[in-house]
Image (cartoon, rainbow, N blue to C red; front, top):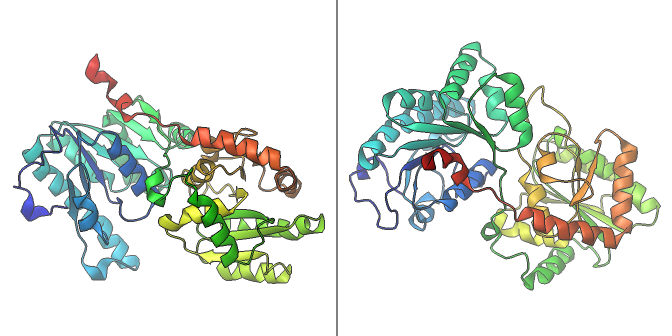
Length: 404
């Protein structure tokens, strides 16, 4: 990692002629979907990229191991929490990304900027006027919604999109939402997130996956022969975890020895625990809390079915691309998911999972009933899921104009 005072240092020999500055307020080692997405992008062209990102815990050690230069701006410790702190951080993100991007231009003379999200886009707009560069902007869903809340920001955001060389959307749903919100001639690309096995610290075909499966089941007192349903995510209302808990007693009634593991924390945790107690399935519903990436492989290995039944909340926010669906598929697990939004990019009906109407109790129960009682179907969907999870789009498609 290099800070402002180190910008006169020599370019690393590992990075030959970098010409793309990738800017993101979220970047590894901080665990976040956007940070993982941008990092995977950088891994495709390590010789071309320079990264400019916000600092986070553990960044110095992480940055020193990368194949590309990483520069950071930092926050005062007392800004890192609270409402006022979040506003101050946003302002600092805009200021430092602008200032450091200009400093880095005079060092590297990069030709392109890739802005990792729609947040703090005014800095990108200014840079497009100050520097002789072309730029791409990545959009994830909620960053579009944020820009629409203020008429001035909406106008500036539209101008930014018009000036872009290209727009990258994380899903077809995000692209469709963008097109219905703005009339744009800017080329728009869909590049889905991908699974990076290294983040789990173990490969999906490792013989130790069986040991991980056993260890998690033993930790939660789950028999090896039981069917385990898994969900991973923040425990918030629109994730609809209560719908899955509702199905546990129904499955038990028809003779399925089923357990449900929830990985995550959030404001609905106590409410979900109360629901499990009320339905008398508290011994069957296991709250694992927050599980870091390095330990998630154990839980994917331990489950038989992965389920997420998110609700449609596009009036308030857009559910981001569900990387957890791809991760479950990577580990060969069939998925039960809602038939809406960006989920459709990750889950193909009867290919790697079953898509349902999350508001239909009948559809949801039938999906669980099918997969719980049909091992052959689970294995078939799991095998196909492994294949789909390995697909990826090359970011060089953004730069086809270079070869015209």
